[in-house]
Image 1 (cartoon, rainbow, N blue to C red):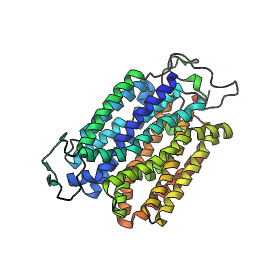
Image 2 (cartoon, rainbow, N blue to C red):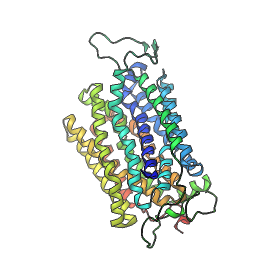
Image 3 (tube, helix red, strand yellow):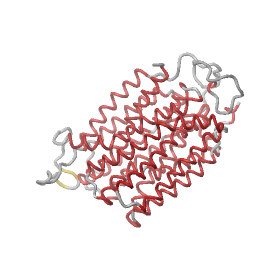
Image 4 (cartoon, helix red, strand yellow):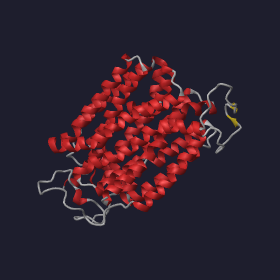
Length: 455
């Protein structure tokens, strides 16, 4: 296997654990709520807390990866978020859970910005969409298997005293009554996931390098370059055309991002996407319980089913955007797939209030997840096209706003569902996706974040 393919595969494995550790909490949220005596708004706030720090640390962590290398930042991130996941199993109070979820957001924030820079270092321009889709697919596979695996693991570990407390804020721990189904051992699940992640961090550090030791073969026949084809001008040793300039400072990166119309459209698009998409990794189990009285193990299966349908879109998204880039050019080859896929997501959410069965709702949410994952490689490739020396910071800027939307989502949709019902919450999601589609159509991948990169 060529080395660059191996780098992409092991980065995808890291993304798999990123999403397992991120998604598993929503599957266990109801048992955690019962054991710790949380109210519904408290549970929604705990689900939301991760996204706030994950958002705010995107640009700083992406800039660190640009400056010190993706290998160091990503290996430390994997180890840190795994330790935080393990610590979740020891939480006893609402405030402890909030602190842990805030820490998880900080430690996971550098993962995708660092991975984007790593892919740019190892991929040719015409491969960026495909390589990005492989890494993002790893994350989506993790997200898809996490609900089913978490529910099954929680039930399989019943009686295993990894962590055991006699009292919680809700009072003494009372064993299940006769005939009552066993409660999942959610504490042990977090401990197991945390230990597995530490092992992945060690593998990543041992086998991944920041860049090839020699420049790969020319990417394509000689032609007039466009603004996105800066493959030979990458910073760092080992590339033809290395610039002797020092890396841009954090302040300069931040200023360049703030001046870019592209970046504000990019950020707004991702904010609106996550207001809708995050529903399936936060409140979907609660919705299935309240609307259809689905038991915990079935909730995990249905949540996994939605995410599995979604990850199929990731398999085609990279090829889709790379094909359209060759056909429609660097600008519309990125903006058209964004607008089409996000417009479809809007229609899927607006259709749900007319559906009456759990399977119809799951199918509609699966279509929405498929289209979100179809557009994801384009999101990565766009940041690589316009980022220049600031790829990590550019992707981090979009991820920051996207995850602010993710932070708003469970609190907003939970409040709307209590006041006006779940159907109204789905209409809010549909309108948010429609706004995202408009922003995606207006993006221009031929305009770099830093005008100096055009040269």
